[in-house]
Each structure stands twice: as C-alpha cells, then as structure tokens.
Image (tube, rainbow, N blue to C red):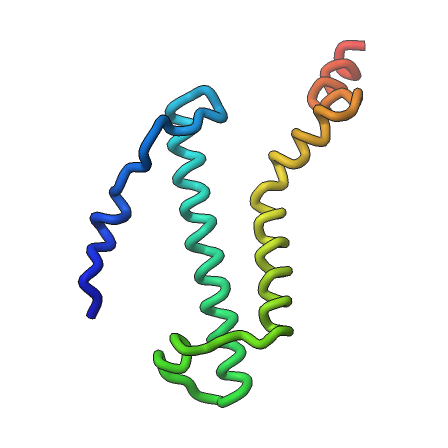
Length: 118
C-alpha cells in the first residue's frame, strides 16, 4: 500500500494566478472540471483497451496482468490515434468556432435570422 495521500494531492493548489481564458470564474471552473473528467475517461479507455487485449490474447486475466501490461508498438500507435480522435470529438465545438473566426462566413444562426427576416 502506498503512503501517498491522493486526496491531499488532488486538493493542492498550483502556485501563481490561475489562467483566465474565458473571463468568467464559473466558466473557468466548469472548464477545469470538464478537462479533469476528459482526462479520467481517457485513462479508463486505455485501461479498457488493456483488458480487451489481454482477454483476446489469454482468455482470462488478473489485476496483476492489467497493472503490468505494456502495449507493443502497434497497440501504442492505435491508442494514440484513439486518444487523438477522442480529444478531437471533445474539442469539436471549440475547433469549429476557431475555424469560423478565420473565415468571413456568417454563423448559421445569423443566416437563419437573415432568411427569416427577408
């Protein structure tokens, strides 16, 4: 058993001022929570991938098998793609907004209003 107090470590505060990307403390908290959950889900996806690979290879597994598993080159590559695709899906809305700012196209909502009013 480890002597690390994970609850204490999770509550530790970073030094310095917190970044302010959104200009609203509530939105900043929600972003922080969301990104923490995204990280946890990513870890769970890798652990599930480990379980599936071990079951395919051995038919039965133990917790020790899972804990000591090291993905081979192909599995690591597949996992990296899986993670990139996952992050892309999570960040899809942000990416689309950034792309929209780089073009002169009107947002769909504005086009709908124009069509309705004209």
